[in-house]
Length: 345
Image (cartoon, rainbow, N blue to C red; front, side, top):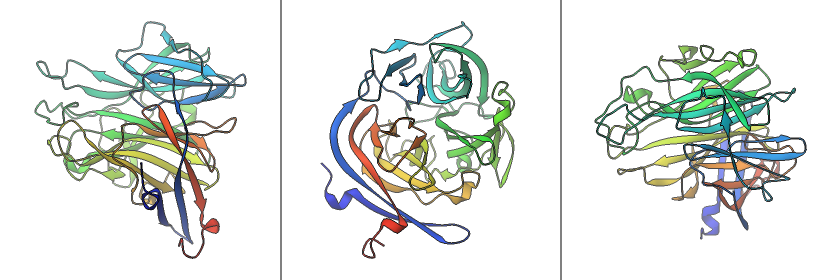
């Protein structure tokens, strides 16, 4: 159980113009578990008055019900036979006509023969039946670096994965926040890329990575400048890095909010904690606040699920549920600057 002093964190966001401040508080609530094993971010969408949530452990499942607390029995997601395997669905966005765009984490299992190391990359798919069947659209984000089969983090020899995707309606781009596990140490950490909305049906060569102030590096290959840089690279046993970003637009704060894990500082990714950061403008990669500890230790894959109709893992209001690996025992209460007392500030 966390002490009350560890539950409250105050942050100040400095951007061009006025100072924006926000605060959060964790409050215990009746526990809730998603009805399937969770090994990644669990994206959600609303369709025909019901909520659907994907969960994955190498094979994706879909769970549907009236809300997150009343989901039905999970069903396997089918495909037209074109999708790679294993596959983890980690992001979703539904078009106005019902076309559902999905993005997945895939791991190349034979990258380092004789070891358990894999190399992830990120692909896209579309569904026309509410996520029951997928049609693969190809890979969109892939490292240009050769696998480092001497990596000692216990899982990955490089690659891009463990990510989330959100649409910015202001500039018409989908933004990918993803974990970069290889290449030069200066490029490792949580990186960012974007894709024009109008290229959603043809995404394979449409994603641009952010590098040194420009959106000009190709999604397949190319370099990155991390938004949250690794302190110790992933090839070492004592890696110290943020990973697994889960982003949402918070309608109460009118800011983007990202939750991340921090792996530190021993083999096999022991979790130092769950962190949170804020940004008013996702198109400005330097606009993020410094990550602040939300939950010490804890499990992998933190994210929110909004509790109101229409809210999901990417759009939430003042008091969403906090899930970690599919289990929730806390809600997060977000406070704007005008809701803080002088003592809070």
